[in-house]
Length: 385
Image (tube, rainbow, N blue to C red; front, side, top):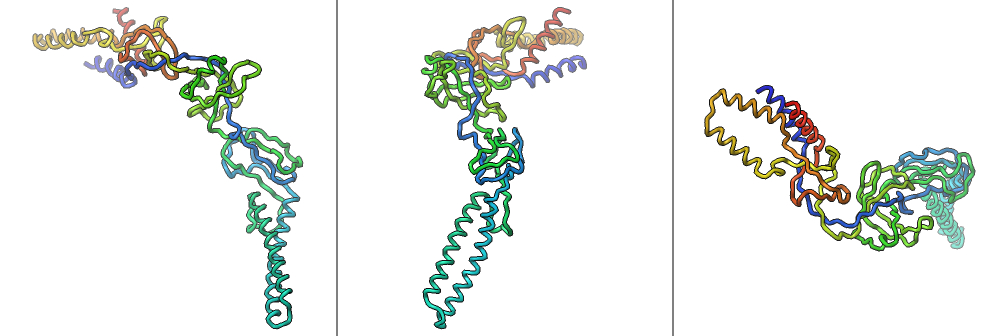
């Protein structure tokens, strides 16, 4: 009994890792394999530009570095900013003085010592100062500087990341002088990657909004959907360019890298399909593993009848022990799974169309390695017997 349990435990462990599914009838179109270039839309690649002329004092980032919105990017020393902040502080003082002048003029006017014209001139001067202050306040806010926090004039101007992303290229060298609107750093948004597929014109014209694709990235295939047939033929390859959006793509893809994309054109037939994980090379052929009771009709019933007859006959204890030992040898030698040779028709994303299985037939979709191990052990056991 102990020996039997030791044999049974690993089989139970295998069984928990083995998953069975049913072969499905799915639409199959013409599958095209072609090159595709990883890209992004123009609005996903942004540039951080200097909004003031000045001297580049420091970069807080490096190419390839991940940044979040609001992170420091670059420090600029700007004489222009120094003048703006000094003028803003001076206007605050002028405003206070002008308000005092208005109060004084109104008091003197009430006593007949000042004219209405003196009061009006003081009010006009006050409004001119407020107008200048409002304009400077707006400019400073656009530079991410809070005017109310200013205590003294400053020439230090810090540019911040305006979105999450990865630093692409440092465009302006450190310690150089830059003008306003000079591009300093490129910032790449790591969401929303696209693939530009290169197709023959005839195939490209068959693509519809329902067309699906599967982009190969790092030995994995990511589903994608059709976005747009680009209007221009590629001048080098003379092929049409079709834009696909990659669904749930990994981050940090290399823009401009070429890879392979499988495109399924409009379905024209149905085919029996199984998961790609079900395929295995066994004895030099592509196979799918199935349970033997599904492969051999009536096998399970015969075994049940045999057990029923054994109970009814009431063998003696000695015969039962011998029979148990015989069953133990059979359990050791026989695998509950068999291999069915299949012919591969086409790969369709995570599925593969095959010949050799029927629609609805049960097969091993996961845990193929364990099934193959059991079958190899079974064949070695039979050879030894």
